Length: 82
Figure 1 (cartoon, one colour):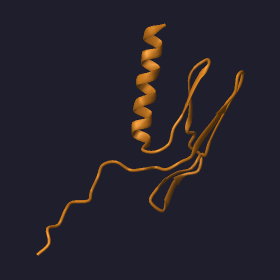
Figure 2 (cartoon, rainbow, N blue to C red; figure 1 turned 90 degrees about the horizontal axis):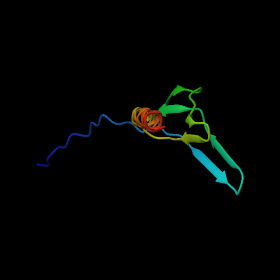
Figure 3 (spheres, rainbow, N blue to C red; figure 1 turned 180 degrees about the horizontal axis):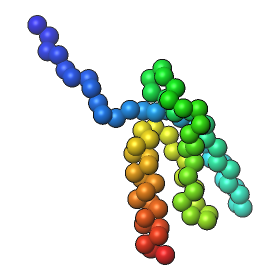
Figure 4 (cartoon, rainbow, N blue to C red; figure 1 turned 90 degrees about the vertical axis):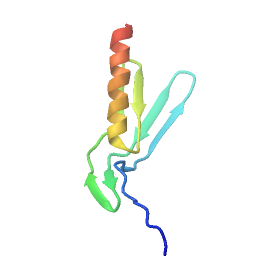
């Protein structure tokens, strides 16, 4: 008899692709706008690039609830520090 394991997880990889190229005086950041779960597309209009400050942006992919939490923490720390 084999032992069964629970495979449920509260985390979901919402996918996505982000790339960045930087030089001496420039930076180019790009990301797709699709959010999915498994084979289902949740939306095709979700920006994965967030402006944190005048010269600071963050591009992210993966579990979007964690991404939003990180963005809130970084924004709060930026506001408190300056």
